[in-house]
Length: 132
Image 1 (cartoon, rainbow, N blue to C red):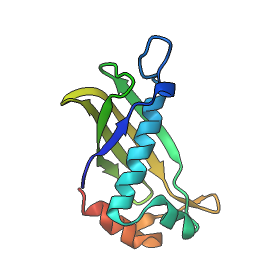
Image 2 (image 1 turned 120 degrees about the horizontal axis):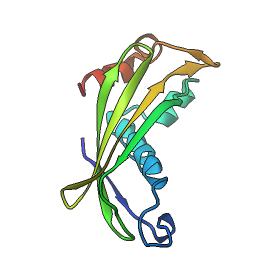
Image 3 (image 1 turned 90 degrees about the horizontal axis):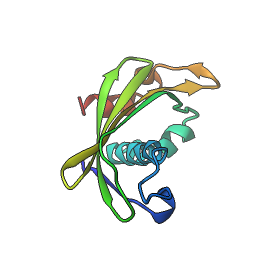
Image 4 (image 1 turned 90 degrees about the vertical axis):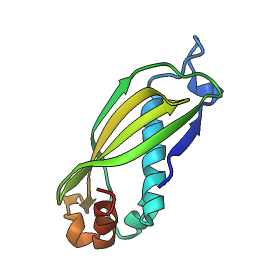
């Protein structure tokens, strides 16, 4: 698995020239989508199956600022998991220095009801298990 890279855009910066804090949550989403694509079971495939994966909790810890044109290297790993939900962990680095860490917790639902991914999406479940 390769890390996701995001180049900070001008519009993602505040008046001080620093990447606005709200954008790091978007960067985590970009990296998560890329991660699942690399597993061969992206969100588009999940949604074609009639399943959605809402974020049920998110955490973001800022360590050091980034600015326009910086290329942030985002490492994604799988954290805690169960039949109904799992966690993505993120470490964002600039030149090897950690600038932000985060977590997002997700469940899977079909028609508004929780589903066990091991039963409903066994290929995805196996792909996630292979990363632990």
